[in-house]
Image (cartoon, rainbow, N blue to C red; front, side, top):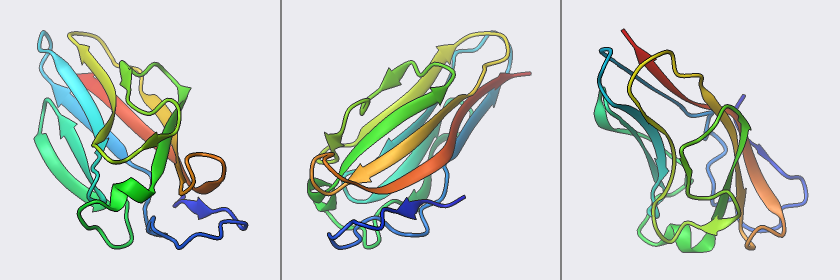
Length: 142
């Protein structure tokens, strides 16, 4: 499922309607330290950062990425399953700096995935303008 706009959102659609659920997975050898992270950058782009693959550019959360666009958008990550190690936006947070949600580091075992929802707002969280469900952070060891 891609995201959905709230019917009552009156502000311009700064978040792209094609922003799809984000799945970040990292698989490494047993005994290593493994981390998976999704970063929403203040310029409207996203990054998946993993131990296994380093930093990988993904897609854009903004309809028209540009320096400073995050100053007009707030985000909240709501964990719906598993446990995030770090959540840079458990409450609505302006994307004026890069905002991360992280699973890890973990050294062994099967990492139960973190599932979460991403909510975007243009007014500090009073109105949710756009929601993306079905996001995951997963750690695996082989």
